[in-house]
Amino acid sequence: MTTNSEYEVVGLGLHYEDLPVGRKFRTIARTVTESDLVAFINATGMTEVLFTDVEFLAHESDIKGRPVPGALAYTFAEGLLTQSTMQHTGFAFLHMELTIENPCRVGDTIHVECEVVESRRSKSRPNRGLVRTSNRVVKHDGTTVLTYTPLRMVKARSTG
Image (spheres, helix red, strand yellow):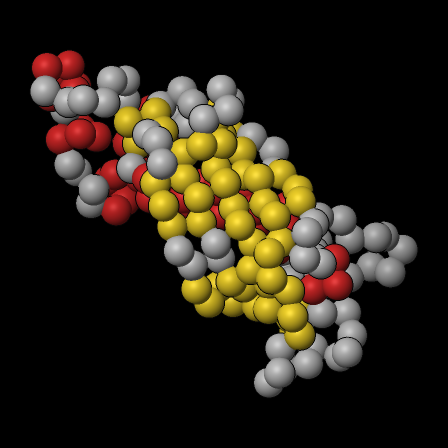
């Protein structure tokens, strides 16, 4: 990466010191489109009739509208977080628990609400922190789509 000291670099992620327990923030929103659904199911092979057959949806499914895989909502959430919190500072995704609570559909606009629930210095790497957040993916109507609790290794500004 070429740098020019005359210009401040913007868009960098949050450091360990920026993520104390109790901090809350949310991402910008993103609308899920039909093209997103088609690209995702083709890229992943998730060609389940629930996502590919509108006649099945109309006559046999309990879910109305065009549902998208929970995995798509999760990956979009991670994309929204990467753009705003992890550039140059997120080093590893170590663990998570995930719960799908409600369907996400084509046309839904989602954002991520995060609360830092664990934040500690790494014992093996003092220039890193371990940060766990409680993340809630929320639709425009306030409905929770899914929740997950990632533990990440994050760059620190100092060694302690």
